[in-house]
Amino acid sequence: MKKAFSIFTVLCLLGMFALFPAEARGAAVIKWGQVQTGTYENLHPHTLNWSGNVLDKGGLKLSTMKTTTKSSEADLVINQYGSIGANGILLLEDEELSDPTDSGQSGFTNSLTLTKGVVYLVVLHDGTYAKLRIDRFTPDNGASIQKVFFSFVLEAESEQPGQNAEPDENNAAPANQSGGSKGTLELGSPAEDMDLAVSSYVFMEGSITVPWNKLDGHTSWDLFRSDNGAPYVKMTDFRLDKTEFTDKYVLAGHIYLYKFVAYNAAGKAVYVSPPVKVSIVAADNVIVLQLDSTDALINGKAHQLNVAPFLLDGRTMVPLRFVSEALGAEVEWDGDKQKITLLLGDQTMILHVDSSEAIVDGKTIFMDVPATIVNGSTVVPIRFVGENFRQEITFDDATKTITIKGGGTENPSQSGADEEQAYGEDESEYEADAHLAYFLGEWSMWVPGTGLVSADGSGRYVNGVDGGTLYIYEDGTFEHYNGSKKTTDGEWTIREQSGTLELTGYKWGWDWIVSQTDDGIKVSSYGVYETGSRAE
Image (cartoon, rainbow, N blue to C red):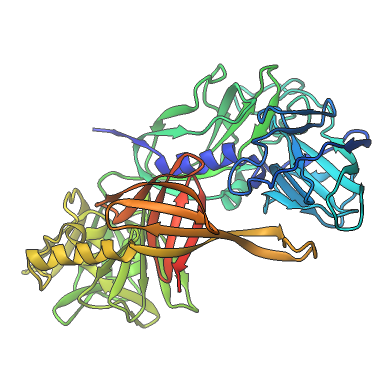
């Protein structure tokens, strides 16, 4: 029976595109209109809300050059303290106002220090772009600013997608999708997108649901798919008015790329998302190995191993990369840290060579035999990899063969039910309590980022922003402080299967997930994340 899988991780990813379009647009070149000039008076007396919506009190609307108190209509805000904010803003180096701009920029933030002569790329309220240069401001003596003089350009007018290009008989999208009342949007090349995909996911064959979030000004969408590098094909004859689509025809062995194009109320395309890659594996892969033999089978097909399975301290050790990739996982190797990361669907496993500790979906797991390197290949206990990826493993004493196949329903490392682990029920409960205790206490938070300008006005770049202090209490509550001011509080719940915490309404009204890292915690939601270290 085929099962329908909802790409929750893709929801996070596409949600990030929709909520923060400046972070990653399609690989298009923005062409600009005529240079215009403007002034901004009646500057805001408020400190910008850097951790939330900087336009919460309104701002300037560039198309009318008038201020508005409506956050949904404002494009940018400048306050009396010399900060400029927008839905997304990026400092552009060595670029003039009239120069074409790559829309696939990264490093956007929501506020920067105001600097004369600097050109900024700004995301407007409708999802389009503008470039803005600060010419001068008064007074110019470091006191409270009263008036700002600037020059700016808006995206050039262009055609609607497909207006001058007919799709082929397979309903493939034109190679260059011109779109929007402003700007040029391109779907791009599937061959290039295989390498440019912002992330990739693995699911079993059947059906998958692709959801995304709605940005202000977006009213309808087209979803496009590329099958094994073929041209992008539109998934429906008519535009979608809902922010999800279920693809009922995905096949094992295929790699699909998904992109969506968003349209405004006038029917103009204003946004194209980056690609998301989804690999489909067979629902019932069967792997057969044999002790001391380099011969292996995957679904009956012969394969040769670099290292034969062998016994170490009574445990069967197998080559990690072969077994993991046969199960459809991605394997990442960090030689400097001797670190292996395995990704399968929404599961993540992190191991270190010669260490008995591993992290599975943020939860620390202990192996009775550590990962080690033999003849250049990393080998691990087969039960650990197979069972943590929910596979069923059987051993045949007569032939010394090991069979791995899908269908395992228990995860012993999470349930404490593995009969081979040398501790009983009471001690397994203690381990769960000990893991929970890890999250409790005071955490100094940090918001990673690039392209942020230091607050001292020097124009120097820093690698992130102070994220305040997070307190996680044993009574099931948490508090977040920015300096001495409490910004949010709420309750947390433990997610037993993944060993993570969920903070209800931590920031921006979102629920955030707290997971354990090598040196602290990671707090994430919809593709946005912060890191935390123990407060001294």
